[in-house]
Image (cartoon, rainbow, N blue to C red; front, top):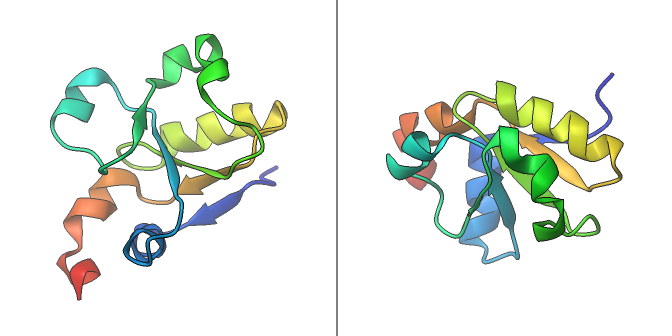
Length: 104
């Protein structure tokens, strides 16, 4: 049962372009992170989230990102259950980098 919000990559990009305060958590593995990530994102691989909870502010909305949206969904379920304000970015980085119309 999902109770956290979800956004499409173009909605996240629109927020960034409007210079909104956006907190992004990338839960991919280090090699995926190194191949490209959203500027300003915090990197904590999914398997390390429970050890890095002190690096996240439960009151601030955090948009969670992975490669396709599956791991970020699992991270959102876990963090939401702990009281964090999280949003899953649907489609992940595959959608983020795959749609050239985002910049238009």
